[in-house]
Image (cartoon, rainbow, N blue to C red; front, side, top):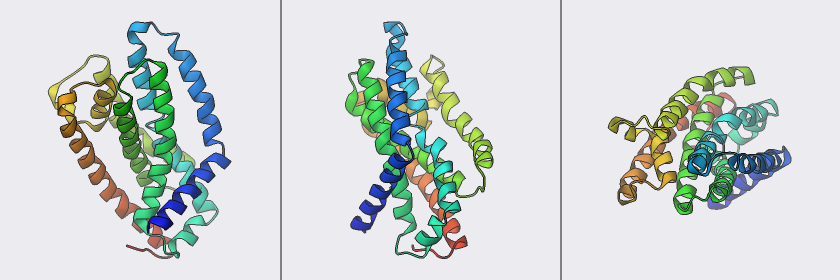
Length: 230
């Protein structure tokens, strides 16, 4: 299983490189870092956190549709569905490959902004990317066109991004601390370090719940194109 999963991850990374994901994010990283220095030093770190959360961390939500639609159009999914590849391996490959590039970009932006919590930024960006990627895969598995995907992502964007942005810029209520996006932002800020174990646990629970739903949806997609491995 490990060898198969590793091969899938490498294949997804090669796909992303071939189709310009890495080039696009090299350009965007340079742009974001330049843009950071247009902000006053007093808000530069918050601006960096907003950039990381709304783009590198959220990459999976925005790009998963095009990836899965490409696989559907090229009948890649048909081949995967009748191969030994398991649903869990397919999901993990997508999540990890997108999470790696998102985390690298996030760390570069955080470093440029002078964020000293780089380890927490790495953890938060990757876990945030996992959540967004699972949502993206969940949606992409049920749609047939890119327009459908763009419309279907809107509620998820609102639920994931709006409360987190409000929290980052001062609207902070105790009940909001259970929101996964807000947990990610607090970790990037380095807040409440003494309760980091609790925040990691909460993110882990969110990821597990979203994964379970995504697994069922992807499993149905595999079944519709030829088979499924548990």
